[in-house]
Image: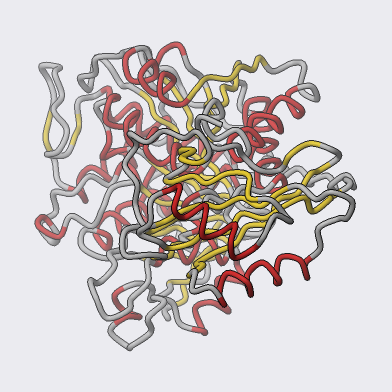
Length: 499
């Protein structure tokens, strides 16, 4: 590791004050792969010239670690440094195919508890072509849960599953952060997007928490939209939206859609925010085909560094860099990936673009809206403790593997288990196929068999074990169970489709 203590100051920009900052912020830097070292060098030159009060330590992450046989992409020494400094400015990283190598991006998000991904997407017309010149949207995506927990199983020859995990605490953290972002960034409205008309428990929880927290922010306009029509509206009329908060998978798709619609996907920054740590990066990839040619666009990482400064409470310096970048775009200076429509535009390389931004430090855009940052960081709101609820075990779903017909399977199950607890439903791929089920639906070898309802006794864990033993002794292969609970008298499980 090379340590730079502190970042060297440049004479390119003359500050209004020669007073040295009260303290330097410790920050880790990882250049990344492909074009990463070039765009990182450009971003650091801009930070240097802007006199950003940073104490930088370089970390050998990604390929440099994998080449040493470290499958996570980050060594124990780097982990120790990152846990000490808690802020990382990261270039794009590739994940080697095969060999058990893990995605470093996912590892960092999960290990550091980076629960909120923040992606601002803005149009820069008339300087960069866009079908939506008024677009200025921020997508805040839950970053740790949902289907991206990555818990998958193959359960039968026909069927694999991916568990969608959503917690009340996870929802509350990202939603509270989103409301704080709207309030402190001078935004006007927060839109929640889910698919709770179908996933009534998981997405329903996200929507429920959103509505509860919205009552605590009467100064913030808020609304909810279903994710499919919401994404369509965002793609065709993005100027109608301001800030959007959404679960993990939807946010990943939506943020890329919005970046592409804006016409500037290669310039979008990204922030990953946690209670104790944060990672800042551009959203583009490693682009190995243009690596080393001095033609890559460093804009995403330059803007990400501005977001990092704002996170550290250095809003004035963040504003200085961001507005100089806007002025550069207005003056027609651009890299080869950007098609500018103004007559006096000039295509430059990576290093020269950074120099153009440095030359405009202290200037503000003339036509584009200047960017303003708060002078203090967003406080991460504390999650409120969960309220106690009455939890009662009322049944069990047993997933079994079988090639029988629904009626034949039901007869086999009832013969094995008996009438207590009663078999109340069988579904296949979520559709009720017994009793009185839809015979037309495609049936695989994976069945959900629901046992629910006791005459005079409460179901216990021992009762469930007894059911499984009876199934096994009768040659019925079960692959999974899910206990059915009522919470304060309300079912904590879904019905079958068609039930």
